[in-house]
Length: 208
Image 1 (cartoon, one colour):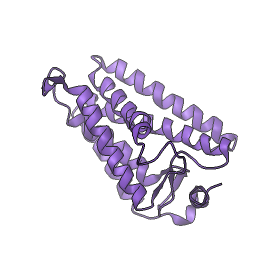
Image 2 (cartoon, rainbow, N blue to C red):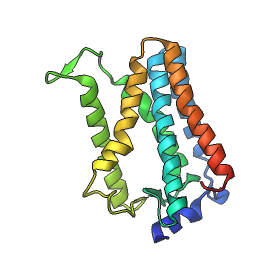
Image 3 (cartoon, helix red, strand yellow):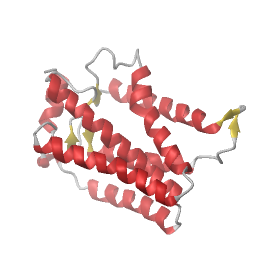
Image 4 (cartoon, rainbow, N blue to C red):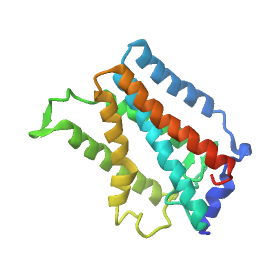
């Protein structure tokens, strides 16, 4: 087991690190979604939940990588936190991803708009993903996000981009652009349902 993994493991679901700022942060996240419900802006509401659900999926398999290798997760969160949910996910990261999808969706132009003659959705998926990777590289540089596998590093950021972020924005934008609210709700329900089943099943086995 790497030192980084051991440090993150020591924080895992340790209640003594709780901080009260979690409560106002939670209320802010709830307010952001409540505002979209009030406006009946289901495109943004479900896009936000879709991205959040995609992150839970990634965080779950990341924890499984650590369980089965016994060496390290693909990414670990070892900085100070109010609560460490999984080895690569703390409560602050969880809230960040809950808001990220809403912010990205609210900035979407109409589907037929083009950027330098290119359809805007692929461009914005790429731009948002690259921006997130740059933030991750900085977080890794300051030591709060750890990478212990040679193929997941700042000098080879392709997997971080293609696996870590592009699917998030792709799914969020697809959900945003679905013509029917029912389709959005069903898609998000499937994503969150898979997450919930995986967390309950693997968690009960002690694998997370």
